[in-house]
Length: 93
Image 1 (cartoon, rainbow, N blue to C red):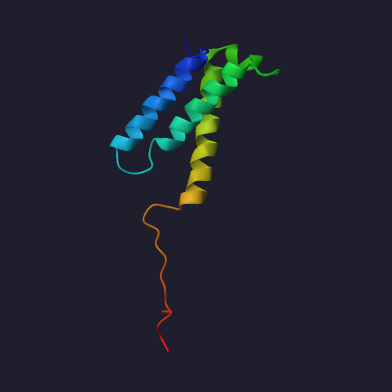
Image 2: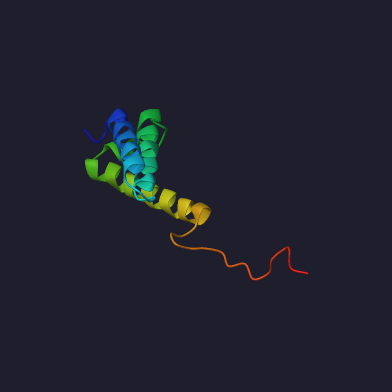
């Protein structure tokens, strides 16, 4: 069942819906990782047959995609609780 592309896309959509319900950016990396895994399996690119060999391979791809998405989103959105301190005001003379 893990080798079916639509299962991964559906799981990604379910995680994205869960992300809307739960505060914070917790599930968005997993959602993007699941959708990207489904897209890779669905496209059936040459050399991607090893992903379908065992369910563990698909889980490995999902884990790596989720980690990459999480790291990219963390860089783009910043860390939680991080704020900028402004020491100079534009209205100061």
